[in-house]
Length: 190
Image 1 (cartoon, one colour):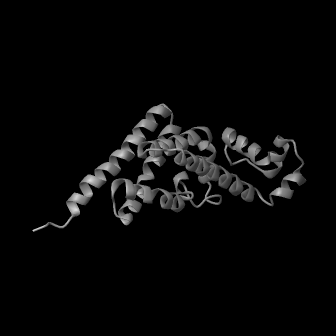
Image 2 (cartoon, one colour):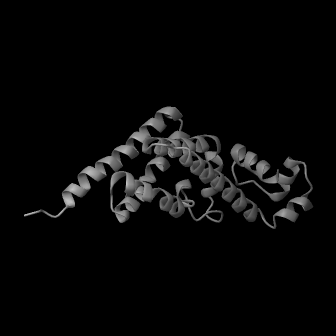
Image 3 (cartoon, helix red, strand yellow):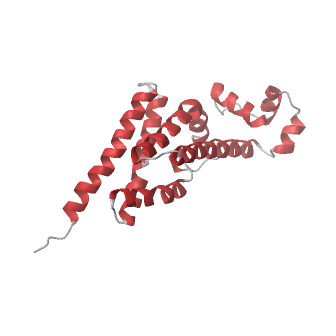
């Protein structure tokens, strides 16, 4: 309840004028109750950001688990990410803009190594790539949804179009990487 109220205030007004007292008043709870859960505003903001990023990753993982094809895998993960950014991205963006709250400035960086560890073996197997190259391609491809999320927040294109564009770019880059990179770097057979 306290974190939800803080998120609402951050969406409406940003972080600059936020205080534990103000959050408590807005949530209809006493100042002492807020301090019982959070010893500082910074602690509350860090916990809120962590909650938001965990929820985002959880939704992406659930979406990935539901996929039966590689395209579905990419589409499901991308859709989950962009939908979350559309609904909660402003909170994440404002919290990550505060250096004392977050050392990362991109939602795709949260839990990234775990996500890459989960996806890279699928990329390696599906595209018959060496694991080190599949890992690199997977990690680098995280930049596309991140850019798509920023673009979505600027409201220049509907979510569905951005999703289609992003999925096409991810699939195209990995497919082309498999065809082009390996062929160009393979030793000549003389």
